[in-house]
Length: 291
Image (cartoon, rainbow, N blue to C red; front, top):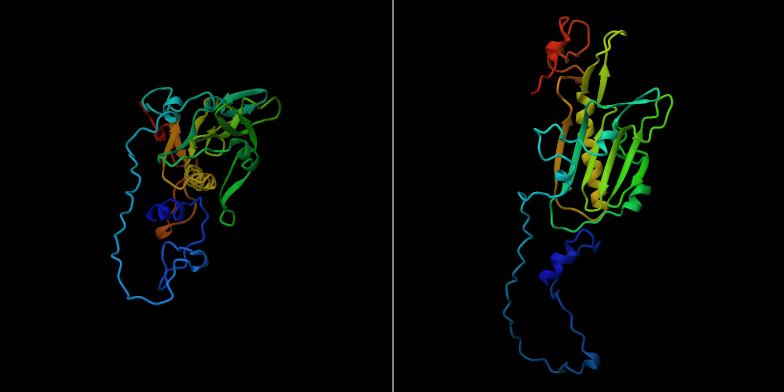
């Protein structure tokens, strides 16, 4: 019976009503005797049956050090020192449209989630293509939500939800603000440029804008996306662990801005880049110079 307890009663997908408890005489099995053919009318002497201790099955072992092969390697997330890190056929579409031209994103936030348990999971991509488009997860009252993109397309192994940047004119099919890619095996990738990064100029005549990442938006997206994906995987019957990669692509010579605007201890608040006097006239001193 321990096998049944482990495989049925504790399976999140079995949807079994919890056991009400144990009462005197409650047992694992109930035997039915048709027409009382095996029952004796006279009572016999009581006797005790020696109980055999249950031997629970050992829990499934998950080697957390095993490479979650496939998705990370196929999409250039394996080698952080390489120029191709985080760049794949889908992230190349990130950018912003200016007129009829799509200007490629200088950098973006990339989040990758991949299941690590041997618990089987197969995402129904056709159903998700209908149910996830534009859907929000999280706390709407606190404005802590993650909304999935509204556009959808499928490949042989994945579903891609995307938000195109139409700009003022021109097609936006190959110019995306952000996208979410879901594979059948549960691997999920989010890449977003709009809202977490932008080009900033201090003068209209500037032709070399500053590359800026927005701190508050980055942190908010990281957490709300995790909450949303947890619900997506749970709806598919997956309740085990995942590996979560958080990546910032294109940070070389960039500036981190948009810190918390609220007043903190001793009435102090974060100084914001691009506010008057923040850089002392030298914006370059605050750039992130990476090799």
